[in-house]
Image 1: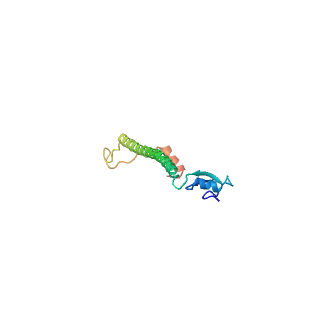
Image 2: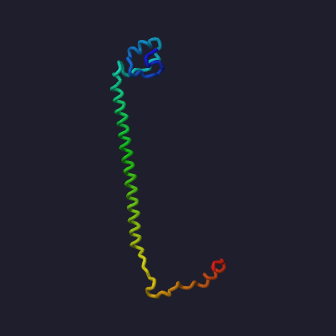
Image 3: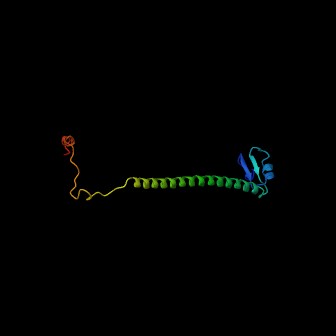
Length: 126
């Protein structure tokens, strides 16, 4: 059997390729591929792959952070606009206290029209 290459389709890493292929001479399909040899020869390939993965995570992270910053900025702008709209409405509708101004303290609302009183009595509300 091969050293670290005993399964079909297995990628040989951190082993000596010549040893792997020599011991698998009878079964050529058992030694799938060989990356590296003599121990440390596969290290540059692993470093390159890890740098590519790190670069992908960096690009995805930057994209995600821009997306989140945009959403937060939009939410802040919505709240600000909502508060400004409320301020504009409060300036438009000014409430004045008319209690005791012209009519005195004995003021009461005007009487209801007779047809409204009749409707309220028919509904049993009065």
